Length: 150
Image (cartoon, rainbow, N blue to C red; front, side, top):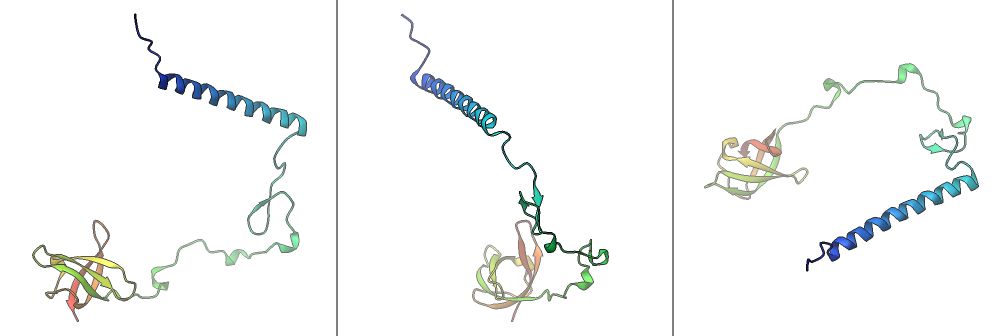
């Protein structure tokens, strides 16, 4: 006598699938009936108010703001307009392993932790030394280079 190929989990999955299909059909019929009873649903006209939000009432024309064409700028800030930033930063050596040749420096301004490698050192450093350094983009983020003791 052969065993049925229909297992408990298969039949449960089939029941759930059929129930989901039936629920979807009922929701669709309910939406159709609601639409027929109440007419079209949703906002017929959408307006944009003075803040840029979508509303169903026309915006108040007294709140409208006029702009001059000369006031509109379509560009980014030029480099010479930006304030000059000092590339040299100060910090404290949090960890340094001289046998492996790497460590971490904590920036005194923002508390960020930066990786440093022995190839980026000018002076020899140990933990808790106060140092000055510059930042350079590395493979995994910003790296401290040109590290000197203060």
